[in-house]
Length: 615
Image 1 (spheres, rainbow, N blue to C red):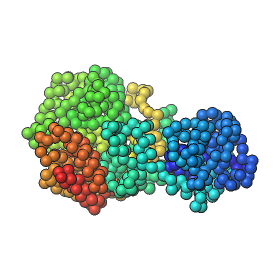
Image 2: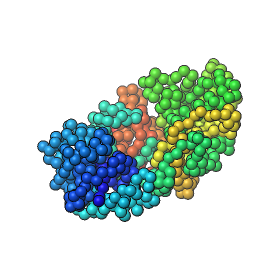
Image 3: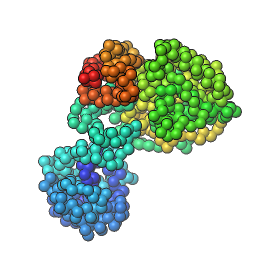
Image 4: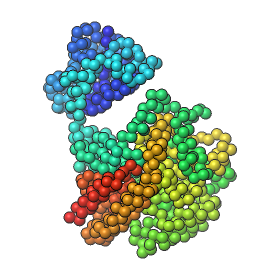
């Protein structure tokens, strides 16, 4: 006798469809415990069961009500009050007058009180009892193909099938925007401004392009958030994650235990990084990678009997993350002032960005002045109190600020002279964006620690990494128990994504391609904007760049429009490409797979947008 299941998401049909699709990939396991707590079969009427495509409403409602009332109560409640409510095709959508009646037994979670229009509320499919037994968590089927082969075809095929119905009833943009407004807090967002115009929705991506809510094809000139190095829809990463999730989706690296993917990733990183950095601890983001570095640094000095070395140096216009400590290191007032930061012991020294402070010095001379000021700060604070300095080889979110010639090497030497650890924050610069696996190799930085994230998985899954020198790791080993780590440190599925991503970058020769071909071409096209009247400075290296934007009134006019870069990025988006507006500039960092033709497309959109800025 058939035992049906259902995924119920009223007013969000796309979510319902996603669940049904996941069922076809064997993802039904998360629903099974809700129903099989008490696998009672209420479908005694076989004809009735067949007539509704194996999805009688009583079982659908029991699934909906089970979490709130308990499985047994849910079955009884729906049998008594709600049996027979179902949707098999569009004709069965309830009329507005019926909604209050349906809402009562299903509770407001499933029919929000403000619902007034017809909704596709219920969808489901049937399967035989043997398959249900196989899908029990203790009896996982070996392949998704086995699951699909045994599913009743009635729920997937034909003009009146549930799938056909759902695929033609996507949630509207206005509906999703309203849900976003009600329930979602966005990072780094002015929410009232965003909701006035409506949240931008991205529906899909392939290669360097995205599809938005209006089905417009947009070239992603920022690679998501400086991270989608191999582009969207990379089959190698998707397949690697799928395999890993079927084999072992998660297990911690606690308890003297590991899984294979993070070991392989750590080995790969050690082979590509500077020679002294051979061990890695994993986290979930760049912020956490820097937090791990901070604790490792404190542990290192504590173990060596130097607990007084606890202050941290970083630079103005730097960005190191959003935790309390990482925000304290970040040299952007908008990131720390609203939170009453920085914390004590975090000290900012000048970053080499003469344009932003309107210095008359050229970048190289200003860089030397910054070094002098850093040396004065070390002397004032006392080198014996300073643990480390965090340095982005190219300052990214602060404005795409490449280092002046010789600056980084001299900074490293200054720190070594004063027994201060040098941390290279390569969350943006690693994995090929500059035409090298690491900026630390490009500029011979020989750091004590490197922090990583973003491009390590091309953003497909969250992963951060902190690489430490042999001296630091051996000191940690000597201290005994290392009491640091996260639940998801060395997550095997994220590590599988990272390994497939890194191997893809290597096999496609993307690092060399950026170094020898697309990087130089990108910089050539970028620097042509030096002649554009709306551009006052051009900065970049490899596949990263920025244009400082000015109004018709020149730099003096920036006082009345300090976020003109954001307005410029909006115009460029309207022209067909996504760039990032930051204060008075636009930043670009496209996927490493970008072609010359796509670079031309990106910059043609930039030109049209900047032309309109001055219209």
